Length: 175
Image (cartoon, rainbow, N blue to C red; front, side):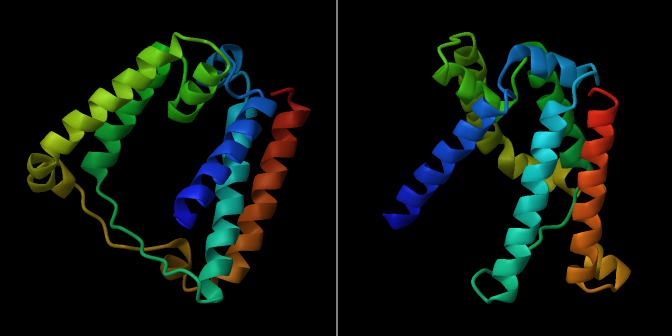
């Protein structure tokens, strides 16, 4: 039960940050799709970098086990196309659709309904996909530290600093 409560609290905080960051606004979504407003990119980059630091810290403290799944190009490409089409047609990505609905923009309901239907179709197709598309372009399980042979606490600061510099560059360009 405590994991459900902590998940609810984390979800509420994430939703609050989505709303405060303005990333659930249609104008921001359109700007991101047109590469004219990098607010969403900066928000997601900060989330990924924070998650990376947190996961590796928890791993080193022995609190979690890092289990990396293999990359399959077929699944990633088809999934990316489906995600991009949905985002482009609706104007929301999955998290922002829920935030928009929470703000009272009921057009987001159709996107959420589409996600639910899509999840059901995916679940039904999963056995077929596992034997076909998920075998296309199957790559080794590698993280950047494994690939380079460099300890993760050397790579992580480099990625965090690079992310900060990229966000600052976006800011200077007015993006």
